[in-house]
Length: 346
Image (cartoon, rainbow, N blue to C red; front, side, top):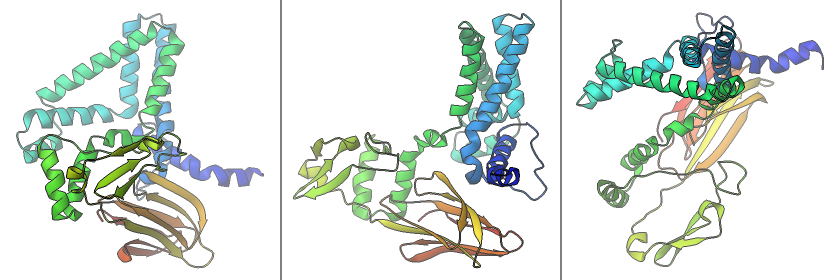
């Protein structure tokens, strides 16, 4: 493989890493350009790389302060300051806004208004202080195990914290399911599930199953057996669980949705495609000849999907179809044309 071919092959990855560093840090990487919006779906895979870079900055601060012979507490404090500077206090600002909003707002509207205010209130100041104390204390404790333990911990935690944003969505599953019920649930389903929620229960889901290749491979099945529903293969095991007929007969399954992503262009066009799948996970396919189609089926009560594509020709278009109905279709005509389609709720 020649040097030019190697540069072409790794150019998209280098661009994504550069964009991730621009988004998550203050590290000056590349030329963002006046009209170059950051496509988070495209560079989401590179987020852990940016996190590792942030952790490396903290590790370098630990090394320099160690050479100066500073005590562990001061080393941890300066390393934490370096981490904050590297990210432009992005996370600290968000933490302060949330603390002020939920601490001082009595209603949803008041909370949002407070969080939009750039000033920091008492709740935000207290939250920031406690968070920084805990971070410095944890890093000081890590230094008791030596420089390498503390440094590798910084790098690993910084990378892993950006590796899977879906972890932070776990509390949102309850409200997502309620919204799906509101939009597409039958009256029977609403009576059943809303009653359970008002009694204190919470809705959720679990994707990973033991024995499956990926988090998107599901072996668990619900089948009807007379007056009951049977749950076969809990987390891919061979256990069989049944629900009493009194509750099982009340559960009506959601209708499946057939979602089709399409990207098209002039003959010979090759495109890079980023899309949000039905599980709200960013995906990417590179150097794909057009037309490109992806069809999936889901039983989720509601889905939010999008697709962003850029080709090497002057024409490109996209389309998202749900249950044979075109929900969004767009096209672009320009050099190295780029377009996107989005369906917020279907």
